[in-house]
Length: 268
Length: 314
Image 1 (cartoon, rainbow over the protein chains, first blue to last red):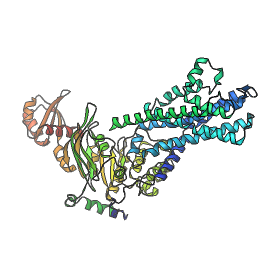
Image 2: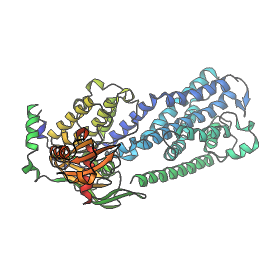
Image 3: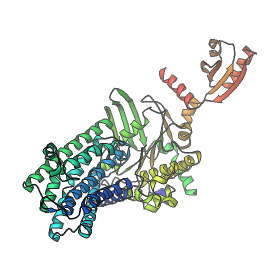
Image 4: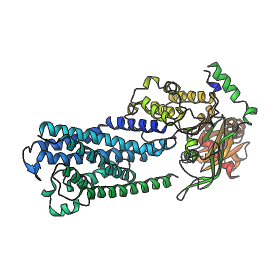
């Protein structure tokens, strides 16, 4: 043990570790953590796939909105899938970690706080990509979905980019909900939003008043962007849907920021 | 091991200690949480290379003091500085490690993964193998956190506190909930860190723990430091005995016996606090031949606090 001589003279270093390395590791371990948590990984992947198989593939050859059911529901269940991956991926872990002291342990380290939030978003994006890929494979293999590769690519990118507003929503819920109530709070928003936006059952089959509510829901706007790309949208320019999603994102980030400051005040 | 012992020996050279630099300071701090006063006119100083224990009952304000020193909370009044700077700055955090009380740690990550992540936060972390060795986690490196025992979990949190090779280490109730063996293991690990020249601030409600580890003890109660000194000094102020007996003598008479600091009635028995148990017993037997059921015990932490808070009032 020659360590006795390492009596610290370390005013020389003031910076933390390499920020890129921190962000990479934070995201990597956030992903592993979620992957190994079946509550998240299995339900995030299983439910959209199960619903798509039950309602999409089984219905087979019928037509909705001018396209095959399997194509229409591929767009809506993929929307449902990325939404779940994003809201649960961010909100549940954030609520638990800030409520039960883990975030505080990290705040006592030189970790830059944005790395922590970025990791949750990146992890959610990866899960969104996985759920979209699986649904596409199912649709192409068993659902007779024939779309050009470029259309598939655009649809996938739209869905994954369109999951970001739901990451923001997850951060907002994560800051408002308690550690144990978070999953329930998420479902209170997630399930009705999915239904009212026509993600389970095509929107034209829903009662008129629900259709009128739908235009206020971000999930409606993302599903319409996806449906536009497969030729089954209800019309309206894509830009308007993106604007709605951007507005919703800003609103959620504002709520998250407020929750963050409330936490800071409570502890500090 | 020999080297360690020698270093411990020189470290406790008191003449040298007076020349040590101050690494952390809390000056005239009040800390309020709403209407609750967690700290009141709190003054505290940590010198390089020392192990300082904050000793006090639950809710005394120990954790609040640690949070202030880590920049996790801001004082309502007064000043907190660590390494001469802002305790919440990144620059300060690179030189500090902390083991905090945490309700839940992500359970699906493996021990080495947790350490790998935390090590990446620091500019000069210890090699993974060294962190694992210091915390005694080599055999558990591939276990997931969720399957570890309470003592093993504490060792992982300890590893996360030291992996950045910090100069100053905060340990908030590091051995709470541990069995005797696990507690002594952690004590050994803390001593090794001191031998490497680290400064440690730990909070505890075990008098024994402060005694075993600390160079200096601050006894804290109701948000204030009520006594401060070496463990020996603290003990000399609180090393009273407690005599429990059944006697007809009135409290006022017992109070006059030598060295009696307090007398009270408890479930039909008389309890006497004194610094001179033998003299009191002689006096008791002289005054009351009927005295019975005599028990003499050392004053525990509870008695120490009673004694110290009484002094505090005078």
